[in-house]
View (cartoon, rainbow, N blue to C red):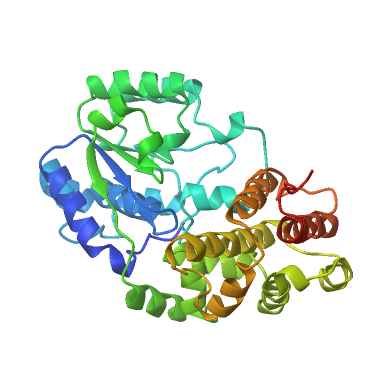
Length: 365
């Protein structure tokens, strides 16, 4: 496991996190948009805290994050091997353990979008995981230094697990740091938030994120970044696991046709092997742009298609667009394992046509 590297846009968040930990704060909740590297930040800080060259001086000074881990001591070697005994990462089973060897791992919400679809329970952090964690914190640390617990995403804690964690945080074990990561902080238990210092991690500046994407070899980085809502890790992942540029353009051309799109055209254009998740995401961005343009004159994802969206608004009603968007949300539940990907995408596009040409008839009726 290679040593985690700091993402270039995280300087301010890293400094703020270090200042909180230097004040002996035992629990920090990092929150912000998915796909900006909050999990990477938490893991990188965990590595810094567990570096024995730094913790040998004092725990508080090590927490200040003035510099990173040395990468040479026994603690760093254990982290590099992926088995440091004083570090625990708690995630839903559907996400598994983060792998820092990948080009910067996705935050949990983004990872769920590309993970195999599993049961609802496997996407939650369960009480058994927190009970095991609580028992582990009663033991003496193996290396004689601090212990670090990373929980991500915090909103995936079910209610019993949240209450169990709350009890641990109310009487925190000595020399133990909890780093919670949340992509939808409002969905975490309010009492749990009250036991943590909240630290918002902001989206990076567009120029900085674009430069980073270019360094990763991502084609059309500006467009990818726009489609990912400004989140560079999501933009990079969409390049690797989403639609090819050719298929992206082909599906977007179908959406632009709007009321003129025919069933024969879409059947001919949709290939047999089509990524359902990437296609649904494209359709959702198109629908959000239509609604935003119709209601507020704003276009976020497809600024080059203002004319097409304006023309589409002559026939497509906002209520019908909302109904189609609701159908797309339901489609996400089977996006990773459709029985027939081509039929699934064709069905969504047929619903799109019906919602435009047959006002009052909800998609899927």
